[in-house]
Length: 173
Image 1 (cartoon, rainbow, N blue to C red):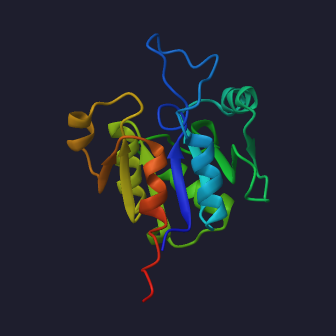
Image 2: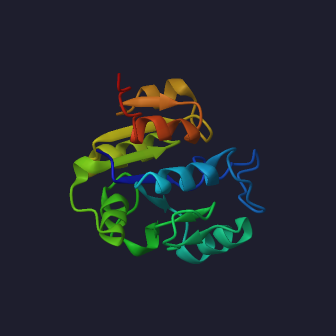
């Protein structure tokens, strides 16, 4: 059972512009609704990024997203944000994922799903020991690039994570 979804911030949840800039931020279609649905189903959501914390917080604010809203119903709310300037080393080291686990109270890495849009994000997920490592095609890398890295699945959009993280209950007859 997945209890924590760790998602790359830029590319997986906010769109990368062709000029590489993130301002003004544009959410990936369905990202905020995916956070809300995962949280509604009992899966905590953490965003990880190589951006400095101050920049990431600014982008979250511009989007109207929040960290730590515990209602689980607010669209755009996540349980944790972890930035590379808060850990010993950024991607592909596992520390961003492990810090996300600490901040959300998740102890078992086998209950963690990591999703990202770059080879480094996939390597981070695998290095962390996460149960599932998922490539998402809304960001920097093409399918061929992600397929060359460690992954359990490659999805077109972050919205497809809901079915992976919380599979539907079997039908009762």
